[in-house]
Length: 105
Image 1 (spheres, helix red, strand yellow):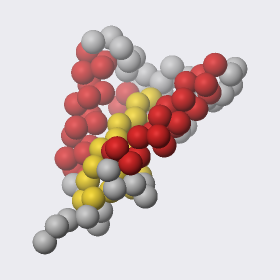
Image 2 (cartoon, one colour):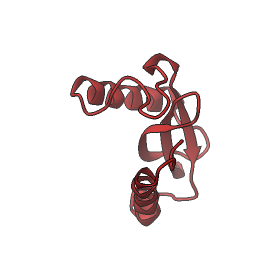
Image 3 (cartoon, one colour):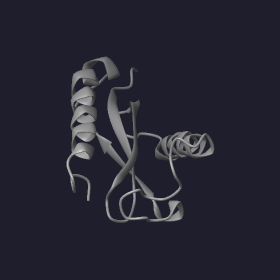
Image 4 (spheres, helix red, strand yellow):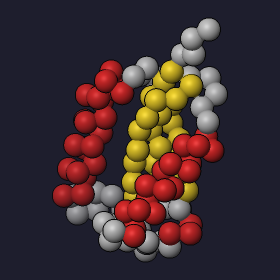
């Protein structure tokens, strides 16, 4: 039996809800492996911090890395290819929001 998939968006958020990192991927539509997703996102974030690309605190409110959490959202899309235009638009809005004073805070 084939398993239906959905695209999930994982956002790393500080306690104030500022988004520090996002990742997307395909997972089981009914029962995604949340533990595996958390581990992958955590490993990606740790690598970015090690490489100096991301600070271990929120650049907006200063919340320490230890206080951040992952928010996992299931989308209506079945594949990354199908979700592509939506994901690109979300990224564009996020970049644009950083250009506005107070846009992320």
